[in-house]
Image (cartoon, rainbow, N blue to C red; front, side, top):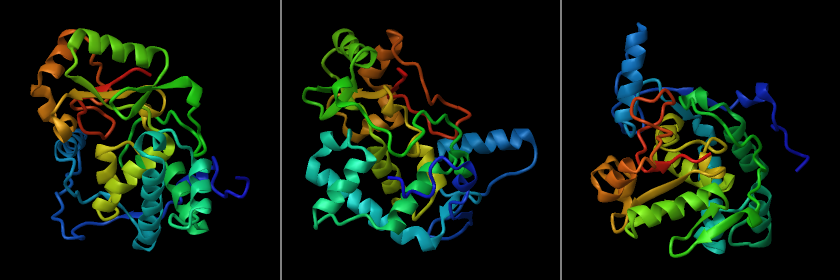
Length: 278
């Protein structure tokens, strides 16, 4: 899409209309300590532990952009409902826009919505506290469908090669109660997850980024995946997973190399379910 106005422009990447404010949206903010280096380290660790709390220096979307958040997220959910969960995990930006144009029930993404999505993607994550690397550089990044394989009975895809091989090794050595809970995620899938969390937090981008990598920053887009305990449901995405047989076996066999470990410097909560591959 040649008409885009925000592509790769670092200066414009910082123009996302966000600002920090506290004590609003019906939540009680946690005071943000300031001063020494030790204070900042302590602050970071507190935020990782209380990742769903609101802090005084959290960065929120300007209220003027909340309609674009709501509308674009609603369209993404409609596209996912149309194509199915698994297929949406591979869908790229341009394909998503085509579905909006083709189906009246979804509706075409408006220019303000496109501008909003681009501003979110090209803004630096560190602006609102996410300090991780960004492996996917363009909003139009594609996942080659001939380089992934669908994993039976999971609704997820993995990249061929080391990711799929590692998954099969885990299944063989840990057992059938080790299940794939999340595999390949396209930019648009990460958008849906991140924006959904931001909406739940009333536009709090900092809170969202403590639980989910912003679009472009997720290593699920290039090879990482999540494992869980069969029958454990959403508990697989909490620290309760560390009490399961699957987790303990993964640790014993040396399969868990944490991308987001306890006390990490990336501004992200501990993710004991995340298998680092890429």
